[in-house]
Image (cartoon, rainbow, N blue to C red):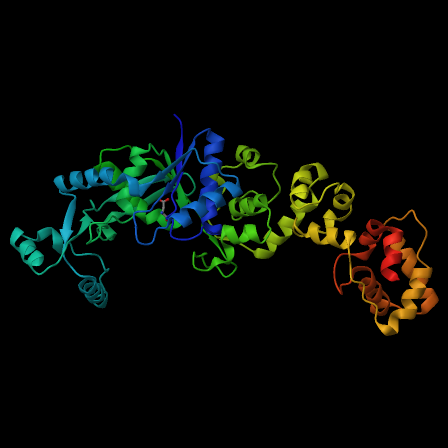
Length: 443
Ligand code: GLU
């Protein structure tokens, strides 16, 4: 059997790190099992869904290394959803309800006050044709609920093991709004059926939904797919990411200059039994990774871990692997530069600052009171060849000759050589500059 998975975002905003997790979990699964990955836009909310978000999601997924085999849009499948609706109505499993949001709210409050669970009382089920006609005459339009069987739904979750959801403790879910548009549940199940989805892998916030969805699969006479619910990625305070708080959007992380692979590996491996460690490719990781490695406890994302991991990956990159990327930044013949400085970079693009510093022109800064010191520095500049020990030799001698030390010694040299009060290690910079450029900058 070919496995089929789907990632089903609603294009109502940019995807964030928390969304990248199910996307990548599904991608891992497809790679490992040689299956198909469908990118399915859950875009039945026509008001909030935007093409620009759908486009951005495609770009973000491609950046993360996900190449969907198929693209689907729920908005184009209305006739299939309508057919399922008609079948459910014919089978007596979908029934109209006329309560307003206010009325429902009051009923829930009353139930709570009486110490009862706030479950929908199924008043809609006992409405006569006259009742309905009366509501319609008042200008009310029905919303439609799926009549649950009210039973223990059992399923074997590929992450969480045996699961039991009791649909007896749930309100019959609303499948269709008053305006006739579909909420998430029905299109999702119908599309999973029609698209032959074999494994539904998603966040654990959907475990309860799964109970109702399994009943829906069964009612529609379909095979029930396997389910896997992974823990949700949260921020350091344990809160989930949101589309409104844009700081952890994938687009933002890309623009911030993080390595796609660093972001992807953090999004997958945090909160699993596999340590966050470099991998040559997602394909390689997929061979050793399994969704069952996802742990049951929370998956906390720590931004400093991403920073450190990103730096670790950049430090490990050989020149051959980055040659083309350097050329894209306009850095040709960058081998010496890369080999000398890449272990100082937190992010790849910082190489550009180094190159500008090395290549110049640089506006040297020499304060009046440092003029004499800088003249001495020029005089004692060692002869070439230079290496990473040159800086130490030079500054030791300057210390002995001028009595300066600490900041009073280093800062004037930094300002003169780089024109900046902070920046890369001078020990590393010096050999890249070479003696002639140093003399010029000290002059
Ligand atoms: N559009 C749904 C969501 O983003 C999809 C959930 C699912 O995978 O079934 O939550």
